Amino acid sequence: AGGFDPETARRDVPVLHRTVNGRPLVWLDNGATTQKPRQVIEALGTYYSAANSNIHRGAHTMAREATETYEAGRAAVARFLGAESPDSIVFTRGTTEAINLVAQTWGRTNIGPGDEILVPRLEHHSNIVPWQQLAKEKRARLVPVPLLADGSVDQAAFADLLSFRTQLVAVSQASNVLGTVPPVKEMAALAHRYGAKVLVDGAQAVAHFPVDVRDLGADFYVFSGHKLFGPTGIGALYGRPELLEAMPPWQGGGNMIDQVDFTGSTYAPVPHRFEAGTGHISGVAGLLAAIDWLTGFDREAVAAYEHELLAYAERALAEVPGLEILGSAPGKIAVLTFTLAGLDPADIARLLDRDGIAVRAGHHCAQPSLRHYGLETAARASLALYNTPQDVDRLATSLLRMREDIA
Ligand code: PMP
Image (tube, rainbow, N blue to C red):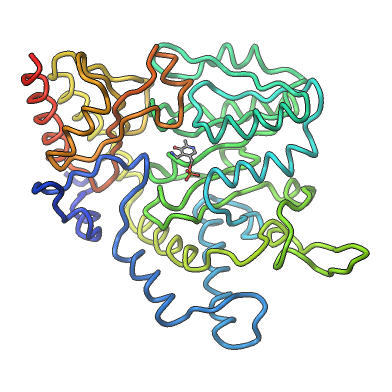
């Protein structure tokens, strides 16, 4: 009533109307990747059928048009994140590449022996491993921040672990397994008192609620287009302008240089300095369309709808005997990671697939967060704005039948 109607999103997304194993698809694997609205699919098609060209170096009309598309995408990402300017946005392949870029440029310049990098236990492997590699190289320490039983990041422990040795806090704005939305703004403010920098992994956040990197106090913010209803292979890094300015380049090659000579080279200004080689131009066109599509909805209403749908799903799954949901932190995103007594998570996913329901099973690239609950694997249903109470009913019915079959 007066809220968001998921049908307005659903009707734009062709794949949601297919069948799987003879049943209408229920896509509950949005944490892994989201489905694409036709606006995104058409943007990719239009780019290749009408406007394909390399950018920045051609002097012809189509090169100019492709450049305009690429830079319009950058401006759209900057607006979407509340960034200072398009120059504070670097295109990457996705979240993983963006974090590695920061680790290998900012990190290698600013992290030294004895320094500490604080990372909550709920992080995705892509926000753990690059820091572990950096810490090993620099003889620094990667320090895990513990979780509470409900999957919240222990704020008292975080405050205790912070010190003048802390150079970086790397934290997800939303967890892909537990759904936890840590108080990133408060954590950033506290970290800054110690002079530490803050990288925020927005991979699971951007599709669910509006983001403002400057309000958050993020020094770096990263996300993937494919979790935002856009194409794979494109994502972005936001960096505070003075930090990006001071960072050395990462990969070397075309597009990132100013002058090249065998005696040495000079580099292009930010952000091009960090974008060696031909970029994913069609991906940027698709990402631009995805941002336009998502921001065309009332995002506060979407967030409210998803929270209602999460509560509905929690009630529905509570009726399945032996089912346990991991993570109940207040304000969590609509992610339901669960176990079902007597069934292996891989079998749960396989049996749901027979009913046309897609969920993920495994360690979700976040082994430490599952081990917090003494588990190696679990099943996960992750919801998006186009999911409905009927999708949740199909999941609950299927799980109830599974329980009956093994009882
Ligand atoms: N961080 C989080 C919280 C994620 O959920 C994911 C994807 N599951 C990533 C990082 C990595 O994203 P990508 O594989 O698109 O680089």
